[in-house]
Length: 152
Image (cartoon, rainbow, N blue to C red):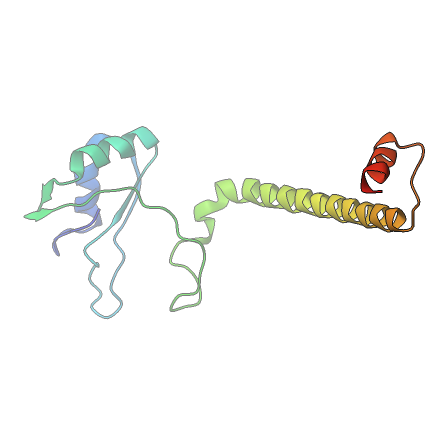
């Protein structure tokens, strides 16, 4: 939720969003210089439907005299920050990490197989072109015979 008034803390934010479903977590990131929240916070629901209901009902709503902006937050990829790591906890994407790793490995394997097949096809094509230049054809291959006749 964005547009939070200075008085809004995690307890108030939790109380504002709990009517829409069970809240798993509430975070209001702090500005390191002022030690006050940066006028936005993250509310995590246990159920996706509850998050959707909260977004539908709270986006544009007023809290402590300020109009809220409520939308879905997407986890950032781990990147360097002030301390060299992302602000999100290491376990934030643990549920999907293993599955993504397996998918990435499968994609690499398929790309390697495809590259090998392409190299083999290119090698065979070069051999065929070289053989045709030398006037050689493979009599057992009707396509090779037809191609040789069409070229000559």
